[in-house]
Image: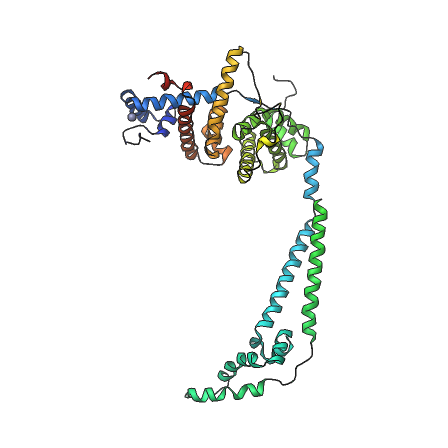
Length: 209
Length: 202
Ligand SMILES: [Zn+2]
């Protein structure tokens, strides 16, 4: 655009002038410039002609009446009547399923946070223990090493290191415990909730059609 | 044509809000010409404009409870323009689905029927030529500019009414209008100079 020099009239000023929306002072300034500048005058006259062409443009006639029938009006309201409880129930069941799975995974992957009883009850940890006891032991060693309430803080690093291998021998249970009710509880909760969610999603599909 | 049982607008709206479809249809008949013309100018396709207008009136009926205080026309035009924007976005996402594919020979350019006042055939031909050139130019504008130009210069709405129809401040209306008009002017200079005064001066 070549009309960006400051003294030329902007398109917005031209547009406002066409609509009679410039205040008196601005209008006088713009009109004075238009008298002396052929470039801006052409820009103004072509813009005004463009607006006139738009006003003259023929109007499109609607091909039909857009009035609504009772059927038009009823259809969406029936769709909207998909019951509120269904949406709530689906949301709650999905949330419960996520929480149960998350808790299950959390307990299974973070055994040291719960001490030896829970470690032995979580199925994954049980398998690991029976295969190779080292990971669970490593998880427990530092905690036990720090935990003993020794009044003297002057325990040397060598002493600590010496302490560590001793403790796991006491802590690791030699026998692999049988599946416990807690494991079953998670399994059945997950299966049950997943089943419920499936049924609810099916209901949603039925309602949509 | 004022008829004795022609009800006033707020009365029709009140009745329609209570589920009186006949009252709502009276509003439809009052505004469908304008709604359809706006949709056609925004979309450039007679069939799409009809779909958009029908859709907009249905939405308007369903959302009537949201209409408070404001007058019906800008509220309706806002629904119409938003419906058209949605269609344009949808079409932009799927350019492969060409309109020509669903064409029937009776209506090759998806042109609407034009309102004809009492005029000579020459005048009518001239007006249609202008209408076609203007529509081409409008379709070259970004949709936000196009909507402001259509509402202002085709429909004759005030800045304030455009502001309410599009949900934008009056200052934005002014700047979009000026840019839209300038771009349209430049388009016509390039493609239809015979329609502008500057062409036969030099
Ligand atoms: Zn100048």
